[in-house]
Length: 151
Ligand code: DAT
Ligand code: MG
Image 1: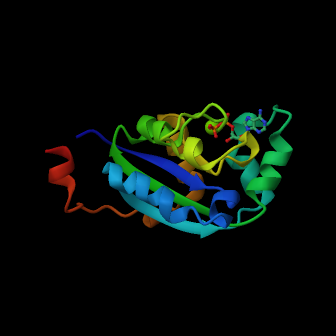
Image 2: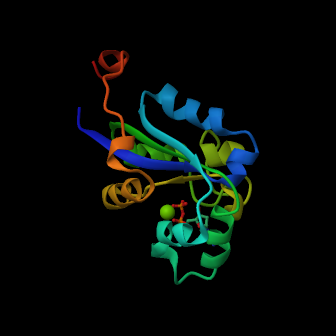
């Protein structure tokens, strides 16, 4: 299997709404492997680093204020195709357009409170994992389910 890793974060709205276990379950039940977690209130400067690609957008400041407004539940998930499929599990950016069955489709209503972040490609996954986690915070292990998930 071609293992890759992606950065997934439950934003302050998802944490406050009690959706941590629901969201973990969706990735876990799919067959992906959790290799890092932390709960942290990011500073505004840190939020700006995380969202630096969007700094020209009109919503950038409000977005960074929001991300730094409360606890964020940060995770790294590992698995074959996890970057792209993680985005599928999450659904479209605007929950009004997310399909039912996706996390945002099932659990969120507006784009400014769409509860979850996921890396959008291999480069951003690498950068975001590096921003949020130290290398030693990532755990390598063989899941007992691996041979049943991958054959
Ligand atoms: P995604 O989170 O799906 O990767 P993105 O990277 O384009 O989407 O934007 C990051 C976040 O910014 C998004 O989750 C919610 C917010 N956002 C995006 N577009 C927005 C808009 N038009 N108005 C308000 N917030 C927006
Ligand atoms: Mg994005």
